[in-house]
Image 1 (cartoon, protein in one colour):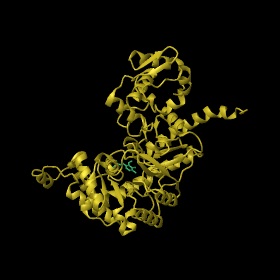
Image 2 (cartoon, protein in one colour):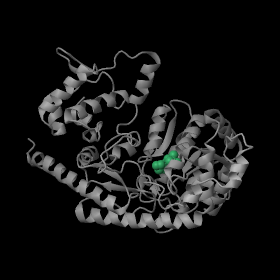
Image 3 (cartoon, protein in one colour):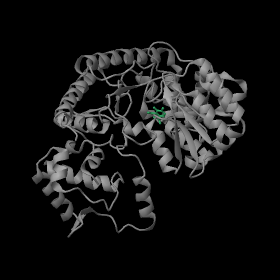
Image 4 (cartoon, helix red, strand yellow):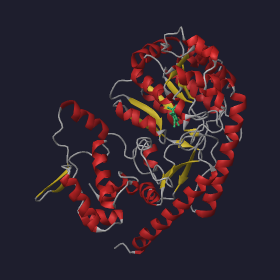
Length: 489
Ligand SMILES: Cc1ncc(COP(=O)(O)O)c(C=O)c1O
């Protein structure tokens, strides 16, 4: 593996405790065990890796020594130093192979790790906590406790009070919904997995926007499905390209984030939603409308979910939602709105997968949704002021970076004007700011010269993040300028 390639697979290795050589060795070892770097990978020559990581050669020599001592790498004469693990067999080998297929830099995988307090982690587009939500919602009332005394707790499709609250919530968004159409899931992530598991077979193509929610791309890899990218423009997905793709050979599934798109923050306008619904119905396709970010608009409410555009669309469109993006990710509550045979099949598979989502968090979510009118305006107001802080810091410190004000959501897509997102993200980690490179959002898996920032953190944290990004950008320019000046002959 080339040093520059390896670099993109070891984000934030320097954040690990201990001397740098230990940090590097440990990061390499973990990268193999989590499949980010395949076992059997030949490590670059010490000098080359040292140059790419901007550390001394001695650091890399000591790191390789440490790996060898731990049995995590072997050096064979003539073939260099190879990362260990070629003794895997059977199921373990299959597990390793599956992980190796995942895109590098999984955003959430590292979020649970301990980090220095001053590190700013913008990898997940998520609220930093429950602050701002009413505490009482997290405490069970005597009446609730009383009911639980005589309830087995098995409600695979969700507890009635929450299914009703979600149906009301969607109806309020302009999509009339009955509680019987709702399946409560463990976050929108499980909703997507449930849909893929129920409706797709390994090898199937799935139409997706060319830039999309990284968690979906990881699910596609895990389920052995193939993303087929659709171009996106100012108004979100290119509906003409979608129409052509559906006409040619209707794939089993299309997945779109038409509202406050993750990562670009764009929204498909109402007239195009209707065209998309018509194309889906005409071709007999099935569309997943991932509406997880719908609630958090900046300037004006978005149009209703796509299923609201046509009455016949109900048999073809699955609307996915989440409590994570407007309430809190720790609730792990999401949902699917479906109808008819699709609803029946998904419901059956949800029971098989986990017998239902936890009662406690469903009760908390229902209590929070009860107070939606009080909670949501505060959440939106916080986002507006956080976005303003991020945007003004970027304009001031990084005037060459281009971005558009998102219609909503939690992500800001920053175009680096041709600079490699992988390298800039790596340099940012050195300055204590963890950001996902664009690659994790790209259906092509390529570096598309951008970064995904989130404005869900508080203003001071965002300003600190921009300071680190500005330093990273300065390093990047210093690193590339002499090379750019070298005439190519
Ligand atoms: C578009 C989209 N879908 C789904 C999810 C997953 O959400 P949840 O936390 O509900 O699993 C996210 C979270 O980032 C998202 O942005």
